[in-house]
Length: 196
Image: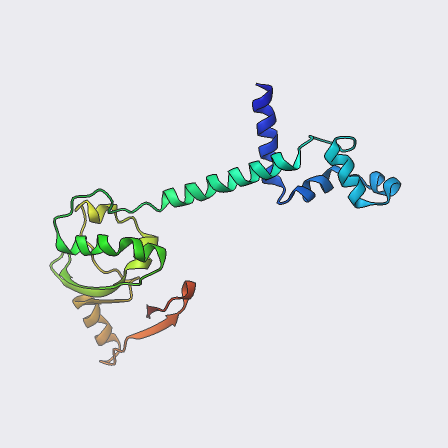
């Protein structure tokens, strides 16, 4: 149990301080610096365990735990990025095409724009352009790959055309309906957003 408590204490120290020198500096008091007059000497005394106000942690232990925590953090991040389409038996050609492009869109290697023309649940024609990479980041595609939901454009996508919305917009603006697009560059890639 003592070894487990010691490991927990080292983990707390490692997460609290970014470098080993920062940890050593936290153990040095102003009185130590006054009498020793040398910060390097004060650090050495703390490292050897002769001075300090807390736990004795060796440089090797600190760096090993720091590396282990970083590896665990990276493994957790990559584990979260598992592909939604992985392991699914897709029958629809559209979903197969999305599955092929999913990994590259998630990693930012490819940017895909999907044009969809379909009818919504009210029987109205809906068409629009979808930024696939953006939708993958903001939405869980599990429901689409499982076939529980159809992929349809939303007002937040690049461009949405809905018959009733377009007619209302034209009547309000005296037939001067002009779509406007805003160009932005998030994460170094070109993106168009529809601005109302």
